[in-house]
Image (cartoon, helix red, strand yellow):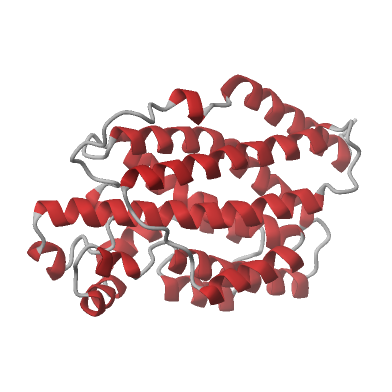
Length: 296
């Protein structure tokens, strides 16, 4: 007998709950928050927005490390912002779901994971000695609109975009001995736990698209691409450059044209684009948006 869709959802949720029981981490106890912050990078230097530019070559080693710490703090702050949106989307989605179901319990488990991640990112940002880097007012308001209106595949595939991009970055950073041990620990915990969150987002996206017509897929593809564009642009706040004593206008200009960084972003999104294509969410207009922001 072939399982019905609801049975498949329950089975997938049971597997995710079992994984969470085995692999969930507690950053409050597993990270040494009192350890001194060494004179190392906040992220792998190759992932800095200026790496590979003429401006990067002019920076001292100290300036490069300081820039990387502020960039890491900005990425973490953007992660907190989107995780808050994610939590609200999930809670709204399971509002009327049977509390006894594995689907409901897994959803709350993911929200609990994201709460811990947000606290972890907040504490790590404080340890980096950087100011608070919030997305712009317009971006925050777009996020408010998105969390209110997005449903189904538009919600879950947009979640997947943010998680996939961060995942590839953080896999590099957590293995890099040039990166602060604290940040490597933070990234390791996040990568381990986000792997099941990405599996969940992919399953939910596929389920939401069952029976979806061409117009709906076209519309959702456009919404997801716009969300991806907003998320990626928000990752590194332009204020980081001025805050480490750089010429902000020049830094923004060189970062925008940095082909090395764009190539890293494209490679980090290869699996994501393959998934979106397999679900009919990689339409012509969506591809143009992804190309403009450097994800294709």
